[in-house]
Length: 259
Image (cartoon, rainbow, N blue to C red; front, side):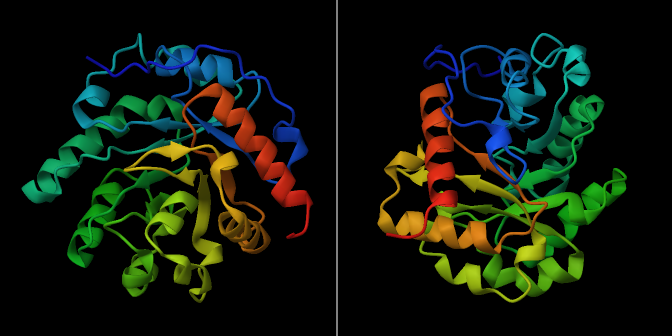
């Protein structure tokens, strides 16, 4: 069965909102209990964009119109997709391609502008993944490779540029996996199309930005100062209180100098 979130059902009470920022803000589609469609309806009252999180392959492939109702296309929202974390890379590109193409078909009615991917640390597979999307009529620059424990874009920068791929920069991963050198990579920032913001927690937990220490806030300030004007910023926090708190911290970091 498709995964449904079990967490706080409280409202999204904001001290600052999307109109208080000079860049586009997005929210994840996994904030309250319920379906993706229900979350998007509620988020659409505040945000202009939602990242559809499809973290589990089989659960996401099992989504029906109850989970992804056609009315989602009628909301005043732009969408991007976060493809599954459990893609079967060890089984080869055909198995991965089967899942990706199934999810692209299922969500095509949302016209997502980009696709976030936890890529494997193999250059050959990057090439095959790019071709998978091209075969679906999607240009490689709409594929956003996220920095993860297994995949540091720094190590594959020549391949990324050659294939015309782009980047989703994750602050929590950057801190947790000591990837700060990535920020000084030549010609990085024009390729950073999406920014994921959270504080690192145990394992893969995404904590609110209130949990960032002084160094984490310094790195966030550096990123905000360097990213391009069209970069989308998404607090990747999966409950309403933490999401609201993260927006407040983001606004504070953006509007104050280091201290």
